[in-house]
Image (cartoon, rainbow, N blue to C red; front, side, top):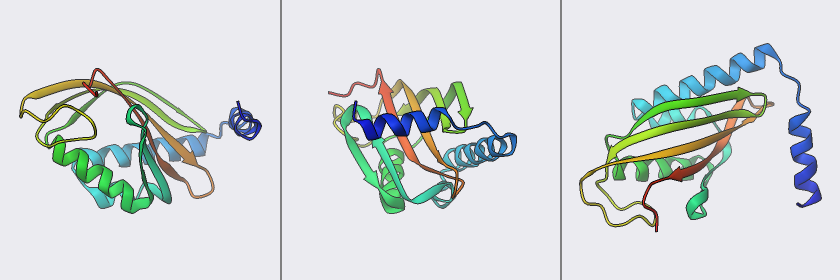
Length: 152
């Protein structure tokens, strides 16, 4: 492990839990989730830092900045227009939000390196990490891990 990465992790582990900050993180995640459910891309962008990064770890693909995050959501919603996230687990702490969800959707348009779309219902699991930026009180993006998705 790189020493600067190690010290960044140690710094995160030493963060104190502040009840007001916890409430702010939780509320921002709720705002993000409501915006996502209503396909409100400006609402989603309001929860993110200007320099946010969206990464689909399985595919090693990233989108940078709010323009990139907008592209991520446009592509995701075009591929899965009826996407539904059924929350299974959530952890909220001073480092951000970690959630696991079961997803159901109809695969309508090519996405990442998945097999070509067939218009059929699809189910998969996803783990999402929303890193928290305490000074700006926003998320710095998402790290997305898909499971049972059919990625090649």
